[in-house]
Image 1 (cartoon, rainbow, N blue to C red):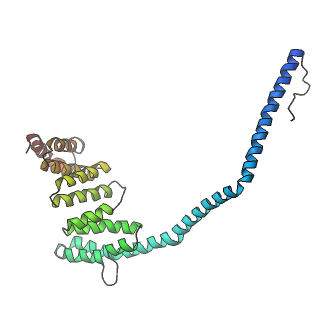
Image 2: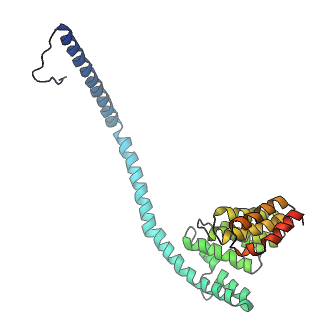
Image 3: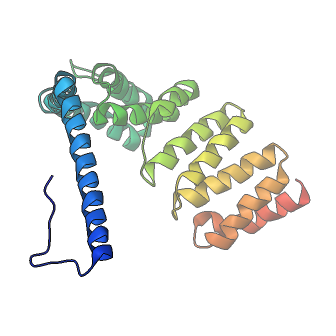
Length: 255
């Protein structure tokens, strides 16, 4: 093993010569150890190269399969589902604006017409797509507006979202459905989930207010008072704040 010596270096005495020899010996041992470690690593790689290459191949294949799935299956599926969603959405929008024909139009939105898919068909035929997820929300809302609260709960519970507005509204509507079914305790739980999901000037005071009313119905006045006071203190510009003093009074009086 070669070691580096400074050109022209000569020990001045015996002690310095021994010190230099010791340093050379230590350096040689370090490099020898490194060489041995490198050799062992090379041997291990050579011995297990088939396994290593196989593992790399599996990872590469998985990545390629995923990219192929997204490119040639999921993207076309998403596009097709989005196109199908256009037709039931038209019926849904008409139902919102035509109360006299509401139920029949919501039924068309849910079940389709003239060979076109409704929300339920999209949910069944395009699972895992954004369009199917949106159809799930719209189906739950349609059932809610038709006063079919059990079906509304079923679909709204299957809907998923992470935005600041739609996510709490979906939870809040489940709470509304339970209140209509006379299940205030279940409703309170969903209202609490709704206002905890995000903080904004629209959904948060609305579901704090509904949670407070549900708590009053359950005789949980301290909890109701907490929610009403939060509206008064933190959301003074919200519509719910206009009459919040009356609700605070009810919570304090135990009525």
